Image 1 (cartoon, helix red, strand yellow):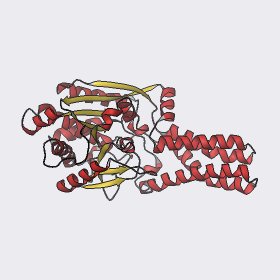
Image 2 (spheres, helix red, strand yellow; image 1 turned 90 degrees about the horizontal axis):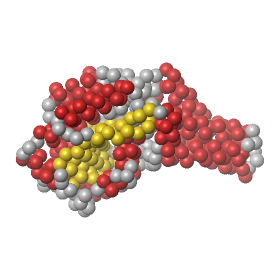
Image 3 (cartoon, helix red, strand yellow; image 1 turned 45 degrees about the horizontal axis):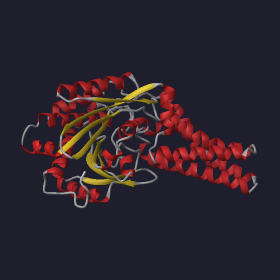
Length: 396
């Protein structure tokens, strides 16, 4: 893979933000499509509605739950229960089950469009799905490099606050005591802070360049597309004779995994029968493969694939980890126990310049891009023509 070309992709894509449904995302989409078509790919675009950020979803969810204790104080207990229960169910569905019901509703209201870019190569029965999201996100105070290490704690605190609010609202039906109401109000404090933080995000923060997250992943996937398109002999020919490689550039990942949701909708059989490799934030730090993902509930890939992945990663000198921050395009696949992993990079346990204005090309290591591409290509070759086999995994 050509290192200079990979880095040039990062520079071009991060020269402007790529917020979901914005003209910046559309320009990035046009760039990716042109590059693929120049390589001879037939490109499919899958359009869908999107909101511009995830803030609206979580302002709605947290508000439903946080308002409930106030209704208990006003003796409107039934209304409080309905709000708290609705909010908590939506929190579970959106944040833990990755079903973007509320996010899709906000997308319809905003009347913006994002799109997945899909190309395929090869004709074999074994299926690989290579994914990289091309949108970028807005910054927020929680993503400030001085505070981002507390992100997981904040996510857990919000979930605990939501659950306790619901429990206390239910208890208020059986114990008519004002202390229960005030305790529920105190318990909702983290949610109010998060609501204010999200409002502050929308009023005062801008979209970030997204060089590492995830222009770097897109660059790696474009590099793989070039290698596969120009590979006419040897192991690459054998790979493409035995396998079909799906190249999927997802839009609107940063607003709630909308791109991967729409791609796999109606393609569950493909997802279940494929090996899914998500390339996300590979541009700076130590490269790893994920076995499991999720903040509150940890979802893991199919067991025999995980064991094979550990062996492969050990042989190529990288680690496998459980990733426990915000979800990736691989997380819903892991929830379904499909054969999925994310290739990511970390520095001291954190993603570098995560969702912040410093996520610029000069903080991306070009050699990380080359290494990431080689690791993905080598993984596919090992599955198809290598000595290692996926013992116990049913053929796709």
